[in-house]
Amino acid sequence: MTTCEKGELMEPLLELKGISKSFPGVQALDDINLDLYPGEVHVLIGENGAGKSTLMKIISGAYQSDEGTMEVDGKQITKNSPIISEQLGIGMIYQELNLIPELSVAKNIFLGHPIKKGFVNQDKKMIQKSREMLKQLNMDVDPSVLVKTLGVGTQQMIEITKALSREANILVFDEPTSSLADAEIHNLFHVIRMLQEKGIGMFYISHRLEEIFEIGDRVTILRDGKKIQTTAVKDINMDQLIEKIAGRKIENLYPHTRKTPGKPLLQINNLSGRAFKNVSLHVDAGEIVGMSGLVGAGRTEVARAAFGIDKYFSGEVILNDKKLKKCSPRESVKHGFCLLPENRKTEGLALPRDVSENMLISALDQTFSFKIGSFGVVDPKKESAIVSQYISSLKIATPTARKLTQFLSGGTQQKVVLAKWLVSKCKVFIFDEPTRGIDVGAKSEIYKLMDTLVEGGAAILMISSDLSEILGMSDRIYVMCHGEINGEFDADEATQSGILQLAFGQKGKEADENEQQE
Image 1 (cartoon, rainbow, N blue to C red):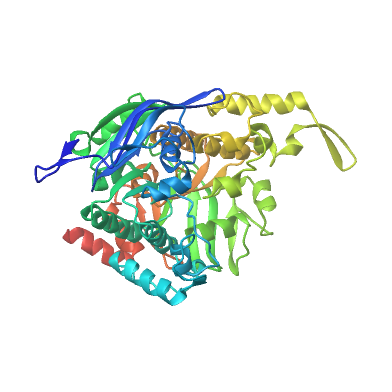
Image 2: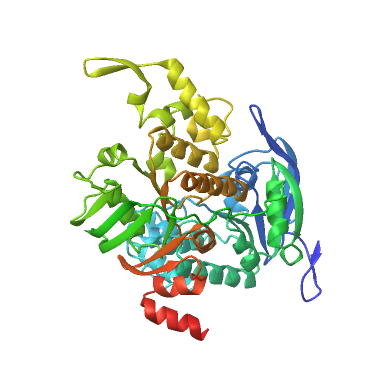
């Protein structure tokens, strides 16, 4: 029981007592106590594998706890399932949105509980009701359009509306901003505040620590399946939060120090493609060059075209003074150029394969002991030595090289993708959203690896939607808007507001003048 601002006593909407859960060889949760009050945003934070998702799956009924109890509105729930959870007024907003693209907005909102007259669905009534609910969230969306025609931010609002259509008074947000632009995040936070005013309680999981201080009321820190601390957000600062999450003091989250740049290793000249035009940039040896911009600005499309995944219409890509003659990943890798994609799970890794296979997949010819005609025979000893070397040097947290990558944490998966390209002897790297969905401890390790790469003479182009990351790790920064480079900053001159002005379409000179006036 707690006291609201008006002095009234409030009972918790949901209370977990002594929750424990284990899987073979892993204690995922150990004696967790947690509660949620009406109109509260209760943030859950912790490293990958800390137990956040497992705890939320117990609340949703996807998992059953081994020990402990759950109470909703003061009543103990003896049996739970996803269906029972929905009936209890619990709505889940997952990072991977649970919508059917080929159905309309209205049919998605009322999926599983359509408005009927007899046995016939009342489509017009569902469209009308959907429009009313969306309007309450300040969303001007036609409920009759297909979900696949809408952006990610809008789809997320539909997911929220879908939960509210079942009269949910408890919402769980799992990494809701990982794929949203700044404007969409602002809109989401506005909606969350509206929901708070209606008395809806929310659990909010995020790796973006700055969001905790903007939207959170209380924060619970988990580490290795244990609750470390629950505190009011106003009573903790960023440094304390990072130390509690990691279990150690991280002196400098962004360790990059500027080096004297060498010769250009990557030059992109007047490149035009499906979603960009006349893009020119260069990255020199010893540099980390940031590429900022809103979602949809064309950053990833430039990276994919330069690496050779997508065809470009005109322009050229030059690696170490040699123009790429063919537009293909094979040609790029042959010249020491690689891409760590935004979606490492589907584009960077073969998840059903083990760590060893993923590391060696792009450099099998380097593990051949001898060749027979056009075929090669893999040398297991050499293969094992290479894999062990990179597991050790990159501190890849895996019990064995034969562990399937799908069971690794996000930060560890990112290290495996990096190892794959280091085995291939690459010197030019594009990191597309290198720390998305990665906890603060793993972020620190990824940043150190990036700094070590450029210390050794590599060149890195880093695409990121995290402005703190862009400002903390870049030597120079390009800003894209509507498929074009709209300006460039030296790291010493760059500011968050200056980058945002260029990202929203102001020209470089105009942005500089506004910055000086501020």
